Image (cartoon, rainbow, N blue to C red; front, top):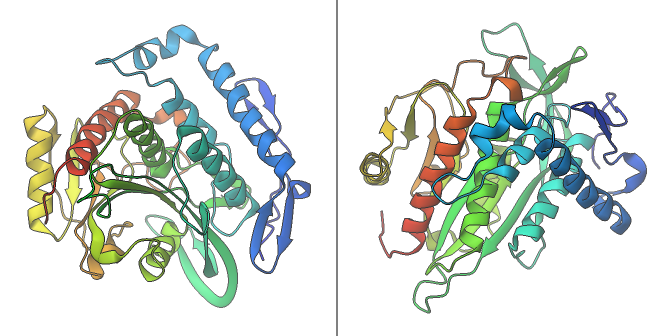
Length: 355
């Protein structure tokens, strides 16, 4: 059963406009987790369209530089997605706000044209009882008991068209959760990791307009901030054979002020391939090691699957702070992250390269 947190706030100001998001009466709670009522789904789709209208028709001059056509691509919905994700009270896994995020992402997956696997778009998993420790240099969750809540992954895919490669998979992943609310303070998590989810959705839209030889799976994980629990669930209960996953590209905290990108991986062949690909396409790469930090490529690496996290060298700046807000994002950097990831995933999905 989904844990109903105490910070239930009905609606939230969106640039001076009030949007009605889902509340508890829109959900059916049972022992298997959450089920969204059909009427509530259409409320969320309407909210998406309404929010898109407000974003695109407010502060036009302020957003002009980052919302214009660039290299033939349009990035209007990119910032709609990212800013909307910052409204869900920090998106802590195991809360109603996570359920609302998952409903939003499911609607976006459907709108883009991503297909569900046989069990649907949503994969559930158990979360431990945690407490946000703020007395550390960087606030993080600590496991405090075995009380269990439900966390949620969102999964969709584009089927490959090559008869020899359609059962090989490229995974594009990003975690949708963040720290939530602590002592009435909201940790919005705009860069960590609404930015990664925004880039994931942009890449899904990019690939949905073309065909790929390999199939491409898109996964928005929950539970990353509590220890990569959602990605571990995917590895433990995969909708596709693990041995058929050719590569995993995980997107995390991409909107830093550095002009460069970093590629984290223990798979040196994949790391070097992506680093060289980025440089050849005009992007800077600065690879740094952070042995004390994890992201959602780790469970895949542990299972022997080629996996990387694409991030920014300065990812730790503002990380897990209340200043990680939409206003502080480097929006041009996020557009460049989309350009890099769109080219990279297209390349991987239309080749037979193995790592």
